[in-house]
Image (tube, rainbow, N blue to C red; front, side, top):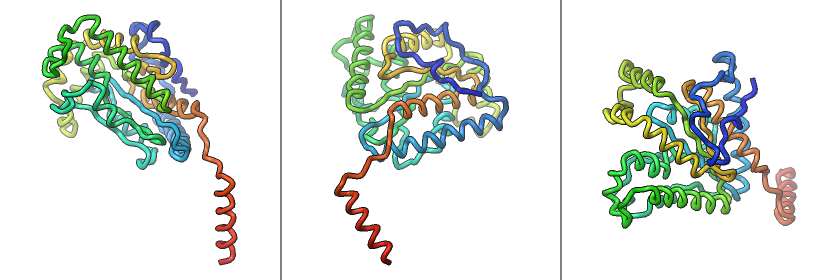
Amino acid sequence: MIIDSNKFRITDGRKFHLKDFSTAVDPFYADKTEYKTQLKENLEEMSDQQGKLYATGKFSLLIILQAMDAAGKDGTIKHVMSGLNPQGCRVESFKQPSALELKHSFLWRSTLRLPQRGEIVIFNRSYYEDVLVARVHPEILDVANLPDTKFGRSFWENRYKAIRDYEQHLSRNGTRIIKFFLYISKEEQRLRLLDRINNPEKNWKLSLNDFEERKYWDEYMNAFEKAIQNSACPASPWYCVPADDKKNARLIVSDAILQTLKDMKLSYPEPTLSHANVLEMLREKLEEN
């Protein structure tokens, strides 16, 4: 079956409405064997593209994962990124801001962890938390000691604009950005949280906060919708990935990453004339011995 991640790609946020997307679609695989085969093929191609990205050293790729709890961010990272060379790939996770981070702009801590040229970086959560969690719970901004303490419409519009400007700046400097919202249903989250309770090996993943945040489901869905509407564009698109089926979600994400790398039209650098002469000299010496 052909995976088409473009179905879930949003390049014009003004036209995005969450109601137009589903948390579940027909699977792109017939069975577990076909799923593994397709994922393996994608990972092998991604690995080849990563080698070219690293060798050229001109561009970088930033992958952002956002979702509700239990939507599968960690599993997506584990299964989709497992085939990449760790020398040119890393994962950055964002938790509650530290005291030092709160003394800076909300984009500061992300800037410190951006990919270098030639590198792929995955943000497990990101600066979007500051227009998601912070929008649902604006009281958490009290500790940031901001000059603007009125968290009305203009406050959030300014934050969205800051994000758009930030991503445009990164794009102009060679960083491709792709953003994934793993869209899970409230019922599927309930089942996964129950599984974490019933499976002792998953107990560590669970906290009381996971249950508390479920009370704000509608508010979070509104915050995700607003974030995507205000930041999806051709240079840094969002993907609204149906995530009730973990395997399907991983295939969609891997295809989107692969297509993004291919669109960059990467190739290994051609040697300069002087470098070619050095290589020829080394060849002659090695062939002599």
